[in-house]
Length: 283
Image (tube, rainbow, N blue to C red; front, side, top):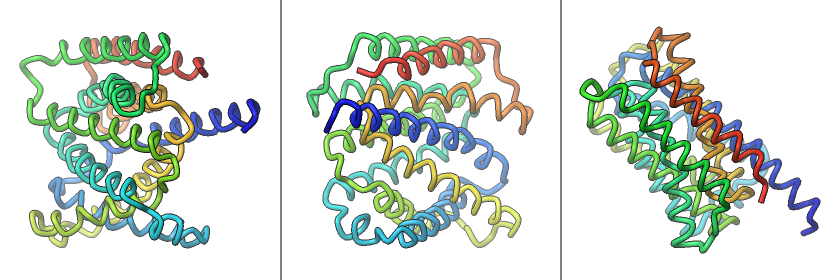
């Protein structure tokens, strides 16, 4: 592959990861915007997300490539993604949107560490510094909420961040792993569990319609993240993904009137700087 082609793939990958981050930033609105319990949200989001993703794959004539050729790495992505999704949605019900999004910013440190241990991928000084800067932003955010936040929600948010870091590294290690198939399977794996632990058919039709939109948004976010992670180093993928960190609290304020702490704003600015550093660094 020529240097120009490699640069083009990097640019495309970065754009896809940014799109994923923007769409992921709306997850808190969907989760908190309905009265449904976490398992009910997980069920309907999963069903619609799997449906939309499968339709997209079928439309592009890639059913065989995305499902039949999924392989062990694809199954691993589906399982890890299912666990991360369950933690992700439940976290929003137990703590603030700002805290969930900020704790997600620990993903760069986790992804860089995993990539170094497993893939042997060296992180540049810019990525390392950006990761530390993002982590510093998280520390500022959490320090403004100590004693008020729900510890269970924060732990679930960290579990989600760890799962996302694993996904990024899997795609870097096995770039031929399809993006859409594992994303759809991930949603389907959660459906029977959510059905058994929740009451998805007991919620209003209006909320089911909202969750169908959530499924579409989540499908777009999952596929674009998977495709972008194949083209961008793990540390930079994680950093670009943290673009959702400053966006999510802003959306929560505009739509749900969830006012962020002043330290949330300060920490979010640090994370945004880290994201811009990652976008500029193309090594």
